[in-house]
Amino acid sequence: MNWLTAALGASVGKKLMMALTGLAFTGFLAGHLAGNLTIYGGKAAFNGYAEKLHSLGPLLKVFEVGLIGFAAVHILTGLWLFLQNRKARPVRYTLDTSPGGRTLSSRTMPYTGLIILAFVAFHLTNFTFADKTRTTIFEIVSAAFSSPIYIGIYVAAMIVVGLHVRHGFWSAFQTLGANHPKLMPTISALSVAAGLIVGFGFGLLPIFISLRY
Amino acid sequence: MSTSISLTLKIWRQSNPADKGRFKNYTVKDISTDMSFLEMLDVVNEQLTLAGEEPVAFDHDCREGICGSCGTMVNGRAHGQLKGTTLCQLHMRHFKDGDTIVIEPFRARAFPVIKDLVVDRSAFDRIIQAGGFISVNTGSAPEANTLLVPPHNAEKAMDAAACIGCGGCVAACPNASAMLFVSAKVSQFALLPQGRPEAARRALGMVRSMDTCGFGNCSNHRECEKSCPKEIAIVNIARLNREYVKASFASPES
Ligand code: HEM
Ligand code: FES
Image 1 (spheres, rainbow over the protein chains, first blue to last red):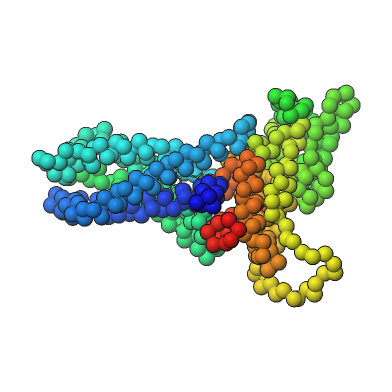
Image 2: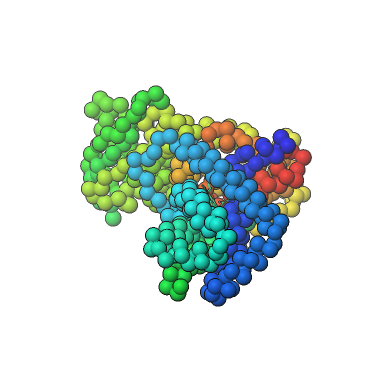
């Protein structure tokens, strides 16, 4: 075990954990988005999807526990990296101009990450932990999105997640060593696409629901 | 055509590592645009010496972009705004008459300021000592073709070996990470048969040493690549990451 903690505790090891857990979340987002698209099919389709999902029973539990574990690793390691990175430059530059490497997305990773964390807590209390004994998830969701405040929060949060994924996706491949002149242009383009798909894919749903139902 | 320009310089002055340090403004007149940035600083220092003031300390040696001694932040950029050049290769023709130039030392916890613009980069030496070499028997050189090297590997190894260890990557990185430097040193050996026997030990040793020296972690901002006077690419960082994974999970060294 000593060799494992040494390997994962080093700078490169911590980034490997960020990359693996981050890619897992990206996979989760893809699945989540695919499921949410059933909203476009109407009430029966959406409730049907939710029922199918919950009929997975223990398998769903395994996924949930896995996601919580991954989240703990991603968040704690991310904070650790952030604090170490700040400490590595105790005196800031008076003038700091970029030669064009960093992006809005790359610079804000720790902050967009923390916003996502706050949003996930909000989102779970809204929908996942809501009492569904006398109603269906569709009713809860469409009631929530009749409020402009909810729509605003959800759309803003999805832009933030899109920003996080826009840098995170390609960065994870680079961290895992998958950078090759043959691969990188495609991975970079996919990273922008992933950010846009997450931002628009999820972000348009509350707007659609409020207009349609 | 050579012309002359006048400049306002905002230079970081710090008399010793314990001094808090501060910016001081200087005006210089009649700077030939044919001068290099360091020659311009020489003119400033002559003025200061004549006026009985302490000249500005800055590192330099070859003044032709090969030794890696020079380097400061110029207007917020490591080695100045020109791409693919060291500070000694930056010429005054890239500035305009009346410009204000902010000159600051490279800043990182692992690179403490010794005086003015001079920083202690011995952390890089400690990283090299942790594995940036190959072990060979002394004696006459072996016949050149006993170990065959594919040309594309030789090319990539040479690209990595172009690193002059100036520390510009650390200075440019928002996290003060030394990953580009370490990745260049690991890559130049990892790509050649002579470097393979110690590859795992080298990757682990150099990464550990980099961490204990107090450098930050890589966030893939790629500011290093854009600032590097030798244009070392971040594909080398990906290669270091691969070497690190191989060494940690598939070698007897870890
Ligand atoms: C849906 C949720 C999330 C997804 C899809 C996601 C995805 C990713 C990915 C793919 C990376 C790139 C890893 C790398 O560069 O190797 C990353 C990095 C990062 N994530 Fe997340 N993340 C999520 C949530 C969070 C949360 C909740 C936090 C913190 C509270 C966070 C903080 C960070 C930080 C700080 C980094 C940058 C690490 C570095 O490069 O130094 N993320 N994320
Ligand atoms: S003085 Fe040698 S590289 Fe600039």
